[in-house]
Image 1 (spheres, one colour):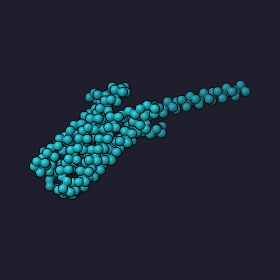
Image 2: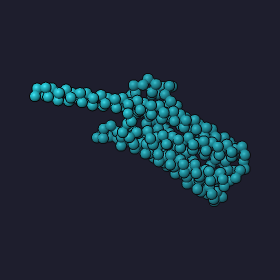
Image 3: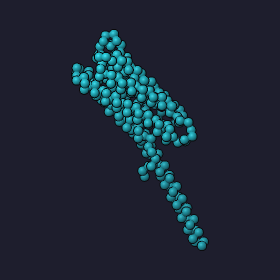
Length: 259
């Protein structure tokens, strides 16, 4: 029986898909820059700008996902809104995404704004590091507030969510190191993205891409659990309806016999 209840996983699915495609794009252009430099600069800038726009959309989708889970679809509308750490994470994710978008737009005149571009990228990755920490914190708080009955869920090696959050932190730290190093090298040597920076970026891209895959696995697991719970609720409702129908029929039948 199809459920008429709005699924809380819809927005998370599309956010995760965009995350996967976006990180595949970043890994591709960073690898091209490392292996085949110099390349068509205008083409790379165009792709880079498109990717930053994609991640702005991704941040918006994750924010909508938070709203759906924490506010709109919460079980008791009178209880206070939970998942506050995730809300802070969404704020920093949006901040970092918009800083990266702004840096991508300024790159079209890199001769005038290159130092500012690198500074925006550094602050953007700093925002992502803070976001990743709040995501992990929110995940831990949610299990303390409502422990899972599944023995494979929680802060254990079998839980793919734990590894997804850890890889997200590691990837963000790689990007933070890369952008920090890029800014310092440009400030002192006037060199844009040397090979060492590109290697750090590619490592970050790889960890982000693998992390995106882990989050997709988390979504599939949560979707299976949600569908199973929804099906069970539908069956319980159907049984209640059948029981009430049977009782009403028996009652009406007994009245007819008495009359």
